Image (cartoon, rainbow, N blue to C red; front, top):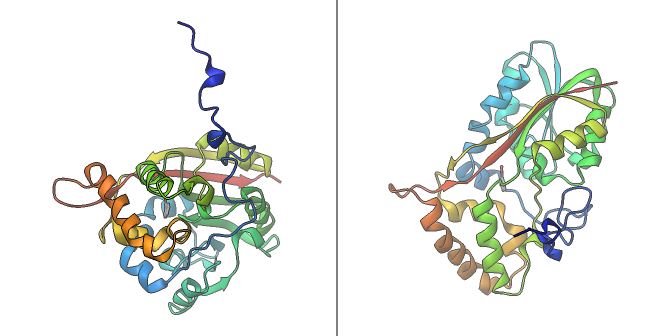
Length: 280
Ligand code: BEZ
């Protein structure tokens, strides 16, 4: 039997545009409807910065360096970069997260990753668990490139291809029952190493290292708290009375897949980790 590969993954909901983003997803300039609460984040997602140490090691911040933390959140990792003796500026689009970072005594500013205003200022730009919220990537990368001094480095980690795949499938199934297409609502993009390398090179970075790292991630506050913290773009599209039943359905679908024998929820995180240099 001869397989016709042109027929594989050719349903309209699966076609990609040049950005690797499924057609019909959020339009490129559209922002997420997610509201960020520093208190809720600290309760349900404190593992995010705690698990960011490998990418911090890849950054190797040195005393005297000037470093931009892109998507700094509440500043937990920004503080560690400062502790290495670097001067750090943190930026985040969420005012409540920036307020929490400032409360740590950090120089943190409200600024979207697509609207960076810096010009040849930084020795390095660092980003952990934030770039998958920022589209279009081209605009972000142009701003990072402009922000760096020539030869400066861009070191980051984000959700990579297949990140939270089971969660995405469950969201898709539950929303489809209610007439909604989850892919159109998704604020995220999770590129493969090849796809992001191409974006970096087009933006005039030399890629020193880029790879995918599967990282099953325990959710200390459980899946429902994770859904409450991160998935407003999906559940917010439902009438209020439908949100809790839909969230319960998602958890019920995922329980046999993502809950281990001890009752701990373990999310199917996949990281894309990279180190690149501003080429010119
Ligand atoms: C992530 O870090 O991979 C992630 C966090 C929240 C929602 C989706 C992905």
